[in-house]
Image 1 (cartoon, protein in one colour):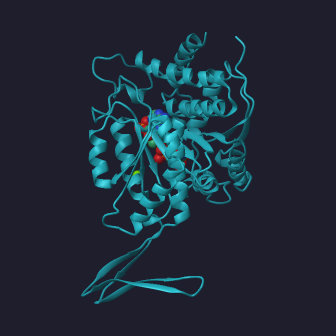
Image 2 (image 1 turned 30 degrees about the vertical axis):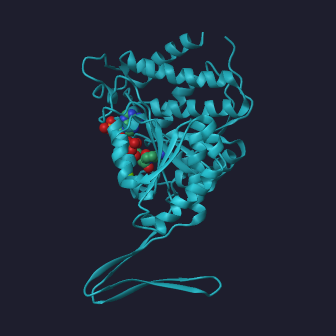
Length: 404
Ligand code: NAP
Ligand code: MG
């Protein structure tokens, strides 16, 4: 069988710990035997970031902008404990995901990978629910204040022209707490563009929710910017038979619970933070969650939502075989290869990506899986735990059959 050809490089961002081990296995067992893989490789492993003073992270984001598609392995975000663990670190380097996101000005979409034998807690969710979280501003960039006497608080904006706008926030008779939050029109617009773009890419309806009945100006701005951006997508949506739907956040929550899934739910920063944890837990496992960063111009980076699985890595270093779940990382690869195929008009590459996903899910349905999934499978259905390598070999067998 001749290998599937690629024409444009895929930006490959390698990472840390157990996921770095899985990364190599995925390439060796599931991709290289079938695809004449063409990547531009960036090592975002912690020591490589340190050696380049984090320039490699910036370079990888710029390469992503140039080529349009990247696949990323989970990486360590150093904290104090990591500084002790890696004494050679010259700085507590920033989160690579944060750096890449700010260079690409992107929005993160998190979606569960669903298998028939693992039912979500919410029984009527038969399709995945993708959450898009606006990752700038609101309470995450706010200032807080506590005061301990009667008085009044004002909100004042001083324009670059010198023009001032002032509002009374409240007059109080005793101790009080205050918060000043903001967002920018540009950031909301990028968020809206990424959401409409991703809805088109994945052919799913887009839901958006805020509390604009209460925060008439603040949340009203979000609603208005989305409506304006929708005008640029209205025809495309009609053509694809997908819809844009706005509703209040509390109504959205009720509808989400009663829905069958199969749409993108765009949320403001705080709503997305909270709801993404609820949705991912209800779908089963962090190890089955993908994360896609989409820039307003359509540039896309695929990864797993989980981290580097440190605890498993220490077992691996002791020579033990681990049963770490590679599914989300495999789907990051398939997502990226599919997108590359779509942009470069390579149907064979797209077919390979689809087959890789199908073989992965078939393996689980056949009862072969990593340890974390065994407890989630519906009673009575087959479920046998194997180590990561055996799991990937089982996927490879099925993939071989699908491709021949
Ligand atoms: P984590 O790596 O996601 O792992 C937390 C726990 O979740 C694991 O110990 C494991 O539970 C379970 N788990 C997660 N992924 C799994 C998988 N694929 N297969 C099986 N079990 C899985 O989170 P963390 O321990 O909080 O963070 C570790 C490092 O990852 C940190 O340095 C953090 O900075 C980094 N991180 C990176 C990213 C990213 O690059 N996108 C995201 C999050 C965290 P058991 O131990 O019970 O088996
Ligand atoms: Mg959260």
